[in-house]
Image 1 (spheres, rainbow, N blue to C red):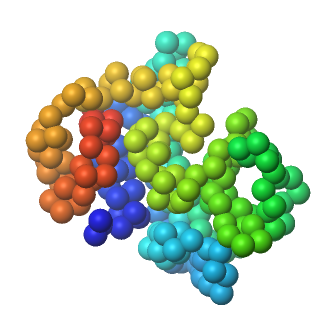
Image 2 (spheres, helix red, strand yellow):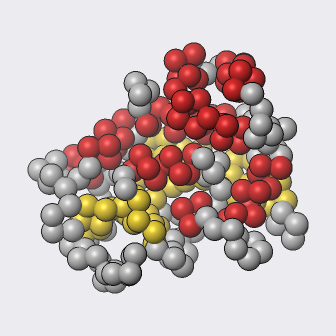
Length: 227
């Protein structure tokens, strides 16, 4: 895929911002105004290549939105708060390491990456282990992701609704319910890909980027267009 992960992410959020039923509270992009963590630790071979490429193109990216109301009358929320900027705290040894997949990883230090502005214990961080790094989403049920690309692909397929890394299909007011509300107000999942292409072009997306978004997400792109 020729289109970078950072470009695909910016394009997806530009599509969400065109939806009349979503209100963006924040939308800020930072590009190389400060050294990135990857630059600061360029000697460390544990830093994944896709994170290095992403951070050099997009040092920070903060977006948050509110949308249609769920059955309890509360608007759904979504977004990301990504930062690869070097600064205090990003490389500290963790005080607490959660159990993931049945065991506690041997974490030497954190690289905090996706941390909501109103931090409530939820965050996504690269955990530097003695011989490699893993990407961990820390919240009620910690989850492991294979790579930054995998992490953002999961988010993209869910419209980045609130708590999307821990999306389950269980009890009320879960991220799954938020996704269901977004789907109910989006193009139907069975919308032909030709129509999705037409919508992308109508939104001003470059034809090559549009084609690669379709290859990447397929019918999940319906989430980016209001019904």
